[in-house]
Image (cartoon, rainbow, N blue to C red; front, side, top):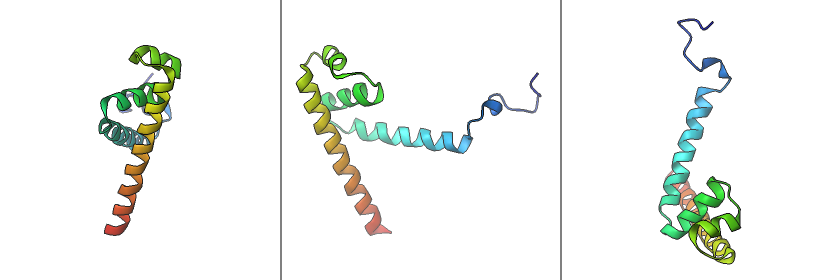
Amino acid sequence: MLSSLEPTGASDGVDPEAQALMASETEAALAHIATLPPDQAEVVLLRVVAGLDVEEVAAIVGKKAGAVRVLQHRALKRLSGRLVRERREADVTE
């Protein structure tokens, strides 16, 4: 029986601070993905976030598997470049 003073879910063993940090990081990742061209963003969401394989994504987006791989590569390269630039800018302003 739960004590009336114990918050629901408090005994599930998840650190609230870690959970908040993870949610913040997820939100930041989704914001970065949203800056991509729509076809690249869709492929990244389906491949990386949803965990679908190339053939599944190709069927969903109506493209060949090779095109999906190229879109994913370009998207991840673009995101990587942005993150590197953001870190450099942050280091300069510190």
